[in-house]
Length: 254
Image 1 (tube, one colour):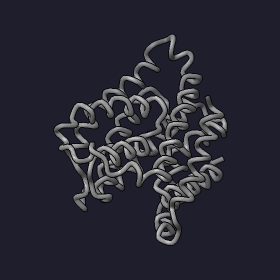
Image 2 (image 1 turned 90 degrees about the vertical axis):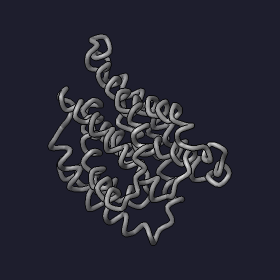
Image 3 (image 1 turned 60 degrees about the vertical axis):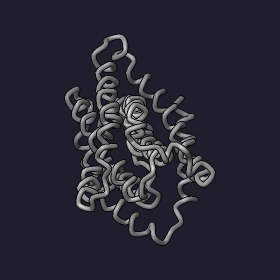
């Protein structure tokens, strides 16, 4: 099993490196398909994500490509909301008894949403940008930014999915930033969010550390290899294919 998990981590890492599409949207449904408990799959994926995002966060910190004010506003909404989602599932007996079913159905809907957002970005990006929202100063969008954090933070806490993909889409169309700053800000915020959510899941015993290690052993070289290949391969066709796979996975879980 550990060899197959490492190979799966390698494959997911390569695809993430090639396309930039979030690993959680691929990894969590795969883990569930392998028979891993949905609660463990979500908790493990959050810890795995935290470790992988740490390397990206450190690099963007050095490059000074992080908008910390935007990270702060998003985190004001997302972190309490993720804590609420995880706490609600684990602390209320009525919900705790059915958490596997709740997580599985939530995963289905969120994967479908992520797939649609990726397809919109692939096919309609030029029609949606630029827009009036991007020209507004950040301070004028403070309440909206915190609200986005609340909605997507709850989704991430419940499913582990969206810390990169959903927040990246929101930042892309609502804030005017250079690509490097958008990526750095997204990774910095995602690191904070999934770290808090991962620690909370670990405190409830919802993390398989051996599984996390095996995934990392495969995915770290995979991301490096995929990133090196990304300069030679057009990402859009692959993103469309991956979005279709994520969409099918989501519809199966609903």
